[in-house]
Image 1 (cartoon, rainbow, N blue to C red):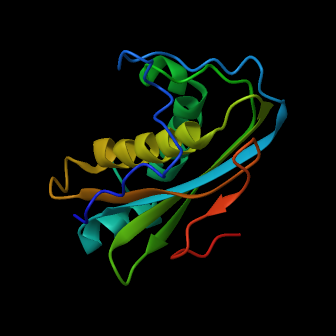
Image 2: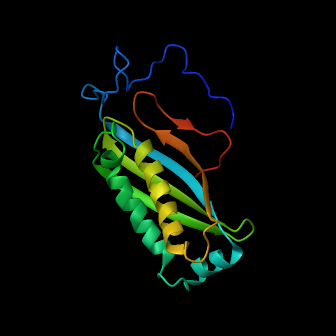
Image 3: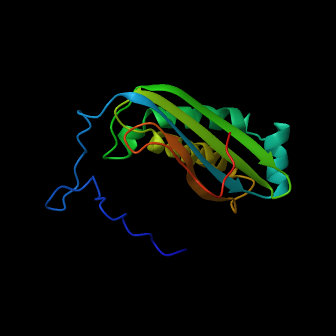
Length: 172
């Protein structure tokens, strides 16, 4: 793991009050804007497990269809899972999976959108995590060595801080 980057000069951690206590940020005065976030992650598995998922022969059913719905549901409930997240009215959530036979992995990508006062990064990240966890749950009977990793924000747009895109990724 690399060294942590310090908080940018002039920026403060907004989830802490002046006494250093956790609090929910007041977004009431922020402008309502279109906001979008894209996140991704992956789950590595045995080649035979990936084959079951792709061929639809897993005993528990259509793994990717269930994982897609689980990711969407998770995005909608992010504020119930992450204590300081604001409840959002999502306008769109898309969860997709791309099997990669070369690496014996499945890449999950989630897009979350809203029109609101705060961003949707946490919703996109939560969708990815729960989508991947669902794949693990449905395949664990045949492969307990699966590994979830590389969960990251790829890009975000909207709001006061503007647009951001990860330098080392290609996104649509």
